[in-house]
Amino acid sequence: MIAFNRYFSPVACILLLSLFLALSCGKRESSQLEQGLSFYRQNKLKEALPLLKGAVESDPQNADAHAWLGETYRRLGQTEDAIKAARKAMELDPCHSFGHTVLASAYTPKSIGSWEGANADTSWYHLGKAAACDSSDGNIWMGGWVEAIRRGDQALEKRALRLLIQTDFLTPALLAYNRWMLRHLPKNALLLTNGDMDTYPAVALQEVEEFRTDVVIANRSLLNTSWYARHLRDRYGVPLTFEDDQLDSLKTHRDDDGNLILMADQIIEGWLELRQRNAFPRPIAIAVTVGDMSFAEDTKDHLTLAGPFHSWLPFPAENPEDTTMMRMSLADIDPEDFRGPLVSPQDRSPVRLVGTNRLVTNITAAALRYSQALIESGRAAEVFPMLKWAQGFEEKTALGPVFAEQIEELKEKAIDEVANKLDIMTIKRPLTD
Image (tube, rainbow, N blue to C red; front, side, top):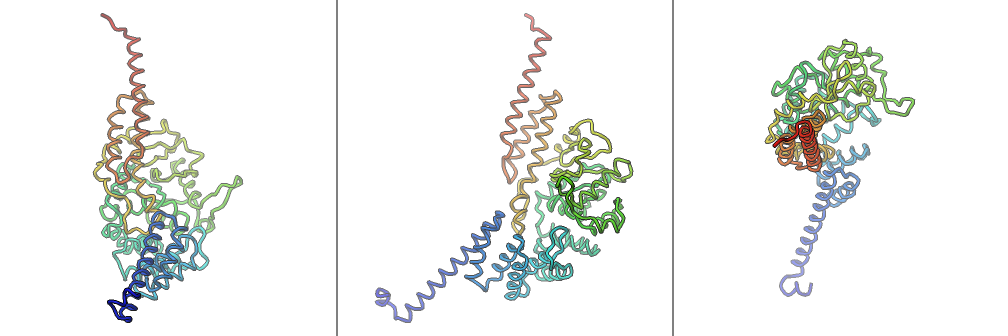
């Protein structure tokens, strides 16, 4: 302060010091928010939480910080804290779309482990407010599509699907993946999907591009609700093996061995039983994204891999891979379509932010599985162009090389098989002078 006094008055010194402190606090708050969001986007929510709390404490007037804190609480299962933080965001900004979206998600009744205060009408109200405040936010339309189905609002269903594409929430590469998944399905198939990014984009393509509208897409997670099962039955004619009163009483439970039996899996098992008796009107396909197929455990020999999906046959399959279908599915792929990310930067789901780009590895995995099948069938010489293609494909994706080691191993295996075949031919046909 002595040095300052040579050039500035005491009042000026105080003002400069106050400005310095304010700027320092602002930087600290901004740093905490940025660091917290960095952890959040890596799905490290417990690490993100104290930093987002600190950001709110440092800048209590920041509505965005309150909303991010609320979303983090919600995903950690601390619903009441999430609602409190989201309401603070809207207290600061009544038309804070993100805050309304947090509340809509918090109040949404879930099929498993619902919060006791869940209320579908409250959720619906906040979804509407979020859309009115900012319809360009694709996060809104993820939940909006599901709630529109629940309420039988087909106009809103269509609007939600169109906006998911128009807002670029569903990226070009993600849409390309879903086209690959749908393209070679059997006519009028029922396709069982697993989560968000093998369901929303596929249904959006049906709506916006009228692509494979003959296919019924059934999301396994949503099948844990009776209203969604009825939706598939009533709109698409997908039969159920349960009457309405039985459907309403279906619950997730554990069997005698302690295995968790989902409501969805009881419904799917009914479909497989009908299909086995030729009483199900559609071919059944299961996307490769459905990792746990315990519902088909007793009939897993009925599955045959066809690239992006497994076909479930009413009888045991001759081979575990349908190499013809695998070749066709891979031949249609343009690697240039997969250069960009499969997840939008506006997506606020840390699970999708971390995991969605890995969807593209299913394509390379299909190429490697096809190559392995060629080697096992004595066609090793045909493997090299496919492995070269797989290597080039990986290099063009946003995720980059993942299967480099496996590609090299298959190359070596194919070389050995070709060399062994040549040796056998030489023995059978000795060289002459």
